[in-house]
Structure formats: C-alpha cells, structure tokens
Image 1 (tube, rainbow, N blue to C red):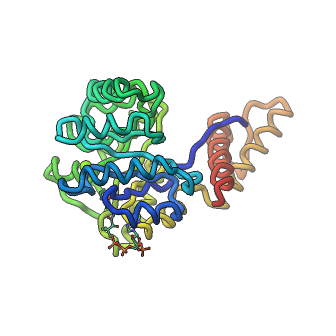
Image 2: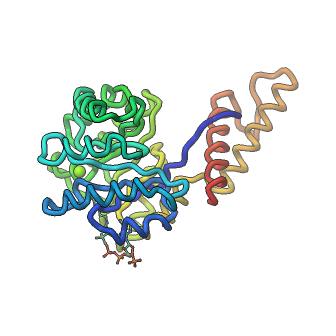
Length: 291
Ligand code: COA
Ligand code: MG
C-alpha cells in the first residue's frame, strides 16, 4: 500500500504580526500553520509581520511535522508583490494566495515568485472566497502548481449578501462546487473558519458537516479548535477497524477467485477497498506524527 496521504485535519491561522502566537504555534498539534500576512494583520503592521514570518522560516527548527504555509497579500495591494518576492526562497511549504479568481491570477503570482528565484515546484494554495473565484473553481484547481483550495467563507458570505447560519445552507453551493473542482483535479481542500470561539457545539457540528462533505480538514482561528478538528477529520478507531475488515474481506474473496465480497451483508467492491486503503494510509500518517 504505497498511498501518500498527508494529514491536513487542522490548519491554524497565525497572525504574522503576533510574535507570541508564532512562537506558541511550535507547540500546537495543528497539521498546518497558515502564517498570515493578509486579513489578520493591520496595514501598519504588514512589514513587521513579513519580517517575523521570514524569521520563523529561517529558523524552522521546532515545527516538526507541521506544514508551514504563508498567506500573502494580494498582488492588487501595496504589499503583495514584496510579500511574494521576499518569500520566493524562504523555504515555505506552500504559498497561499488570497481571493484567487482565475488561473491567470495564479500564473501572475508564480511569475513574481519565479523571477525572485522560487523553485518551480513551490506549491500554491488558493483562497476561494469570491463569487467569480467559485465560478472558476475548476480552472483554478487545475492551474499548474496548485495543490490545495482553502474556503474563505467569511468573505464569501459578505460578497453573496448571505447570512452566517448554523447549518451553513447559504454556503453549500460554493462548498460543493469547490469540492468537485478539488477532487476532479486531485488536490486537497480545506473548509472555512468558525468565527464564534465560544460555540463549541456549533464548531463540532461544522466540523462534522465538513467531514461529511469530503473536506480534508478545517481552517481554524484559535488553538482550542485544533483538538476537535483533528478528531472530526481523522478516522476514529471504528473507521480504521472497518477499513481493515473491508481490505481483508476483499483479499479473501479475491483469493477465492471472486471479484466482489460481502461483509456484514453489504457488497464490497474495488472502489470500497480503495477508500478503505486511503483511510488506513491517513491513519498511519497520523499515528506517525503522534496522533
Ligand atoms: N495561533 C497561535 N496561538 C494563538 C492563536 C493563533 N491563532 N490564537 C491564540 N493563540 C494563543 C495566545 O497567544 C495565547 O497563548 P498564551 O496563553 O500562551 O500566551 C493562547 O493561545 C490563548 O489565547 P487567548 O487569550 O484565548 O486568545 P487571544 O485573545 O490571545 O486571541 C484571537 C484571540 C481571536 C485574537 C486570536 O485567536 C487570533 O488572532 N486568531 C487568528 C485570527 C485570524 O487569523 N484571522 C484571519 C483569518 S480568518
Ligand atoms: Mg479573506
């Protein structure tokens, strides 16, 4: 089973302007750290935030398995070009572009990165948070180097003139459209944030909904959200056991010369085995990083 599955259950935004938070992030069990130069940073703190994040990347020790992704400012702002130029060779695991609306937007950012010496294979992650971006989800997901879509549900709710609701019905078309695009392109996709930090039941429900829809994980704004997100998006012991049984039942059927197996009265086909193998690979990768 040589499936490469990278856990991205929890992706915490860490404001680049907050030195204490950047430091604390080393100790937090988030799979991904989104080091933020954009929305979480006030205009007069942009340059200092960039320097803080560059310093974190220079002294990477201590971050272990955590993926370090930097969210830059847009190229249509006063800071976007300098962010990309400074980060090109700084060793980030990926660059997260805000408000991506087309494959051409990705290409323009990659041109700036390339001219500043970035490796050609530097992964690009894209914020999906405007109506035009959602409508062009597939061309964005299929653009060269794009490795992950990140839902920006706060901006999107505002642009749609929609409301934040518990069941997120106003978001479902956009969430589903981007999921289709990410899976068609074979890349990762993360759900949007839950803004109410005191609403733990609502947060758990949103995680469950994101998992049911097919998201790899959820973007987060506070350390208290990491544990519940890891639990919701990682397979639990029962799911791992069931995946093992599916693989075993299928192998046993194949050994008998049958193309399908029956487990607990349910038909098992090759497609169920592939999904079971993905679950086992994800569980193994999570176990490798200590849970
Ligand atoms: N990343 C890393 N550490 C964080 C953190 C984050 N996003 N948010 C809070 N912490 C740390 C705090 O530094 C504090 O650490 P300490 O007790 O060791 O000093 C601890 O977690 C508890 O924090 P708390 O006091 O509960 O929250 P706060 O008042 O410091 O911060 C927010 C609350 C909302 C301002 C903060 O969580 C934040 O800035 N979140 C990110 C917002 C963001 O990125 N928005 C843009 C994307 S939507
Ligand atoms: Mg945004």
